[in-house]
Length: 292
Image 1: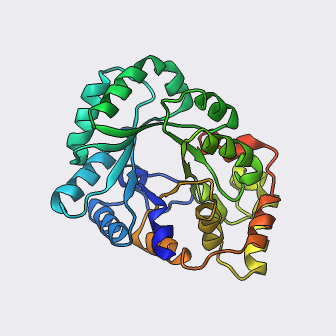
Image 2: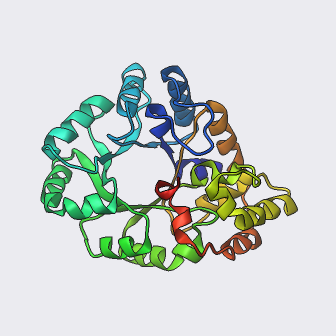
Image 3: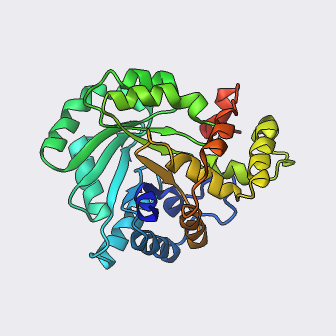
């Protein structure tokens, strides 16, 4: 059971290339620490990494790890930049070289707007799939409306969307069921809402203040059931049958170790029902790109 739970995880690499996250006090992860994290992730059965051209030098950090550890090759998802100003074939060849891999697990449009603006390039992506350079094509989205439109495109294999204790089944359940019926692979991100769940509820941060009632509620659920908040957050995502893989980011080896440890104890159905009753009415608050 533990092995399967670990295999469901995708390790995000934005912290390897950038200083990222509302609760990240450590800054960008060093090359040495990044490689320690990757080595541990591989040993624990995590098979897929999530990256992007926009994530600073994350590609090169992964590629250096692969060169030094040819027996520990990850599958890699990466994303095209929001603005495409060069040949996609050339970009993919550059990505393969930087990552030191023979193929990409998936190539995603980094946003719905990028997908819409560059939809004419889809034939190029299909050709890359047929040539074996990429396995899947996908789109990173935020809203259910965006997912609805992406579902109209049978050539999209993967939909990556936010999902967490707030952005939960109440918000996403129906559209996830629809996506699975269409045969889509579902990847979720923001399991910890960029660390928002671990912020002091009395913080002066605007987002924390706006979501204080909900933050108190999940804190109460965790406390009443004697479950660490991180364990509640990660298991809520990994135990969803509609979700194929759950993307998490870490800024230290210790964080990854704690996340792996959290998966050893599942949460029960009654807890999941309590979480599902949380409904954030101001949906824009769940989109970190809109935070001040």
